[in-house]
Image (cartoon, rainbow, N blue to C red; front, side, top):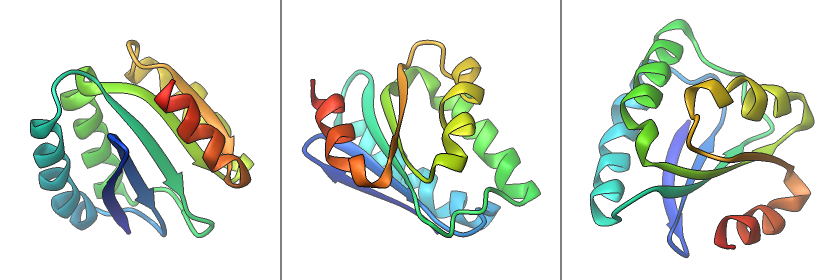
Length: 119
């Protein structure tokens, strides 16, 4: 499951289960539509559900292509999820997003993540 919503000018991306190519085929047009409405870099809150299990091979490939294509649109990124995803969510992703500051927050700190993005 990969969903995109907006809250207070922040793109909220929810990910759950194992992400596949089909999820990205639905997600990318929604992202492009949201990005077209907002100029400049977009603050993002990425929420990893408790059942988030990464990507299958097709999903991983599509995610990497998405990241490379749109990385100049990414503003600050707050990753909210289980502690086991902290390294992936911030440290390993940093080389892909050199111009975006990333921080990890555990689920109970979602409000803090949103405040950080708004500051």
